[in-house]
Image (cartoon, rainbow, N blue to C red; front, side, top):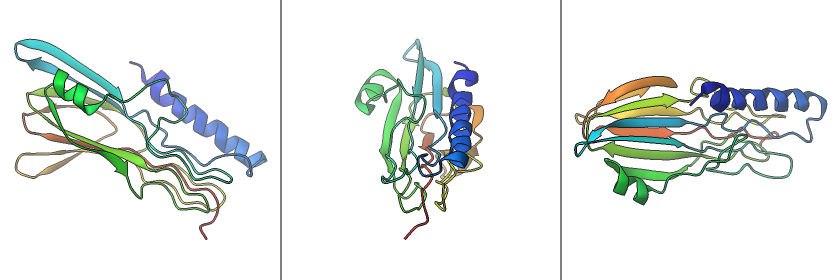
Length: 193
């Protein structure tokens, strides 16, 4: 996998849309989630090596006349989610949440779409790598719309301690660690009513 293809392409799309918005603000959407939220894991389980890779969608930006779409891949697509039933059957994972991240889209006359919450416990020692963006700053709103909420990934430890992860990192997980992924919502378009 290459960040040049996955994450950089998201920034290129954002820059192009932001530039077009200067010339034709009535025709351009606000920023979408701006990340492929790449999740990679692997290790040994049952005497065999395993590996898992997935990209997780977010919200599209609000656009003239329509709210953004929730829980989809933005700008660079051609990927689908892995159904949790398949992942649990194939990998040492137990999913605890898979839902729309309500309220993560930016406010606007037309709201940004909401991101996704996807959480799971690991059942074996695992190496987790994250390659993502939009953790420090949420997707920009346009024409008075508010930005969407930034993304985040954190680990809930057995003792209920929380470890916030950076957007580009790799960590070792222990059995029963819970990984919580919250993808960004899209920016809002237009001044909220």
